Amino acid sequence: MNAYVSRVLESLQQTNGNEKEFIQSVTEVLSTISKLLEAQPKYEKNKILERITLPERAIIFQVPWLDDKGEIQINTGYRVQFNSAIGPYKGGLRFHPSVNLSILKFLGFEQIFKNSLTTLPMGGGKGGSNFNPKGKSDREVMAFCQSFMRELYRHIGPSVDVPAGDIGVGGREIGFLFGQYKRIVNSYDSVLTGKGLNWGGSLVRPQATGYGAVYFAAEMLKTRNRSFNGAKVLISGSGNVAQYAIEKATELGGKVLSVSDSNGCIIDEDGIDAEKLAFIQDLKNVRRGRIAEYAKQYPTAKYVENARPWQLVKCDVAMPCATQNELELADAQALVKGGCFCVCEGANMPTTLEATSFLQKNNVLFSPGKASNAGGVATSGLEMSQNAMRLSWSAQEVDEKLHGIMINIHNAARNAAAEFGEPDNYVMGANIAGFRKVADAMIDLGI
Image 1 (tube, rainbow, N blue to C red):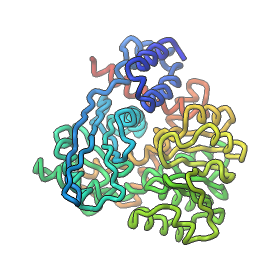
Image 2 (image 1 turned 30 degrees about the vertical axis):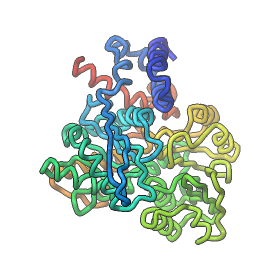
Image 3 (image 1 turned 180 degrees about the vertical axis):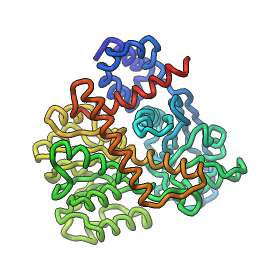
């Protein structure tokens, strides 16, 4: 780590030391771009690290709403607009009890480089609330979303900031948010992505993050003359990303052995086929139930409470698709011991720094989420393009564009890593490729 990086990290530790997720994310990025900073002193001269680690704007607001009993509830709303050097802010909204400023700053910071890697003109941002949609009626979710948008609308717009969904924000929530925005501003703007197909959404958007992660993993596997065909795959999570990662990995010949939620983990050594995936989608998307029900429906599967899949069964490929820091050092050790040769992140920063380092030292192909889960925001960008042109592309067209973007992201990360002597270091390559484009734009635009 060079002196410039050390100085900036030390300063951030003093000013933001309580924001552990944000500090972790910044440390992961900055510690891997030292070779670029040494080769290009212009970044230090222009104080790019000091500027890129500070959001351009962070908005915090109260969100009061009435529950079904007529009682007033109050949540905190956030929008962190991190960097707009290459385009309007773009990044999801997360509704979850764990949401705080540190988590949204980490997600917004990651989003800068993820969006840069897509090659589309999108800056980085993130937002959300500590509101929990689980267990709430549709009317309560609508009441919250409408109140949330009554403040958020002031800070977004098609050329300013275009939010999307994230954990806790699916099609239902996007619909309520967009409906309220449209009523307030009296304009049918392309201001949210992840919209319904019959009111401006894009085909393949729901599948994009999961599909894209599998496309990226397939490219990594090719570098070692391997493929998904016949591979045993562990996937965590059971939301949108996990569901479509399961679908695409199976389509490419993989055998997916796991699925999980915050309560526990399912191990199904028979493999999760199309029928079982349909059950998971109905359970999670329609009935909003817990994954433990899978084992009751398919008794040959095993349910392990309060567990993640990484230490429960051997695999060839692991895809953490649930949440941040879900794959720790002991999990990485178990994966290596079990013969895993590829870990591809579907979630945002699901692997701890210690686990990442261990995997890389043990010659495991490892991709950071900012590269391998960029398919979602890439397709959001394609949705924005379709809205701007008042067009709707076919599923095949969108999927082909998505596949091409993921191949390009893989190649950009690998080429940048090779440029600095470490072709298999996707973390370094993705960070250098993503950072360089944004940093150069910041210099071009002046202070």
